[in-house]
Image (cartoon, rainbow, N blue to C red; front, side, top):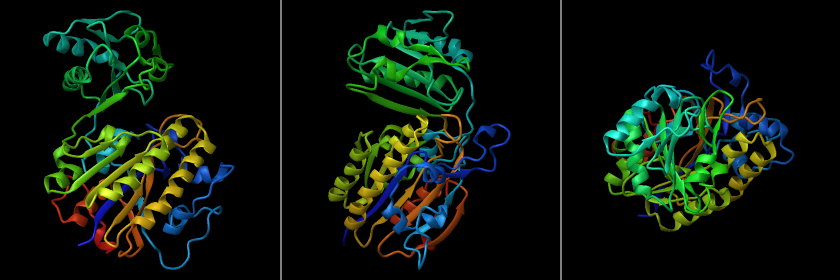
Length: 404
């Protein structure tokens, strides 16, 4: 029997139109359509592989060739079931988790609760500056809001890894996670940064959130490590863990390996788009039967920077690598390409936008066709499970029968 892989490629934040539930809480996302607006405004964008697969059956943009003939890939759109427009929650939903609605609370509201939980476990905990609500643990670790995302969704646990092991940072993060009900707690750190530099990078955002400016702190440099801890997430019910339990191989690449917990998976860190795509191509050389799941993160970073041309460049890098992936696919492989939310660089703000995502599903022995607008990103996970004939994840409905 030949190789049989599901290759899942998530282009972080490449949404295709605002959800109809954005009012009243996310009215700032009205009119968002990340992919369409990049095509509107990019000085250069050439995506022949995505065109060949049929992306214009979804986008219907005049800059692309009109879709003609029999569809080569299954195509459609996916609605967001998770609250807001969050990469972590989106990825958990993609892997088959039924989203639970977390609380949205600034760290200041939960600071005393977290302080008490850590003190009870023997940690030294201080509030160094009463004017800035953050905690300092053992004179090393800063716990505060994440100031790079939506209000009240995420708390960061930031550490200098020359002075404390990442395992210890994770233990601190797990205590914070158990004490709060916000969407996410992120434990992160880097080497070559001092506790003083991290504290000097604490800032107050215009909306009142207080946290470490991570790029300014230097933690994203040498020896960077990160672990995301979500609210209401059980990795054992996700398709990645189900596949490992069923004896299949699982390879998580790029941001995918940052945010998905899967014991037994091979994990390949990568941020640069070229490195992510090369890692996918290399994984195709050794994965015989199982899941290769990768996230291209630099598209999202370009969205946050409100840089249309940079965003277009990253999409073109993906498209160029797709030619190699398509050529290297076996007759039994399934390729799925999608996103986790939107981040429209033309909408007038630098945050994520609550958008539906596109879906392309292709196999050399599969048929194309319209799979419709799906209710949840989890339909990806359900389809992967169906493809491998393993138990389904906790959420989602398979569309595999529509493309077989």
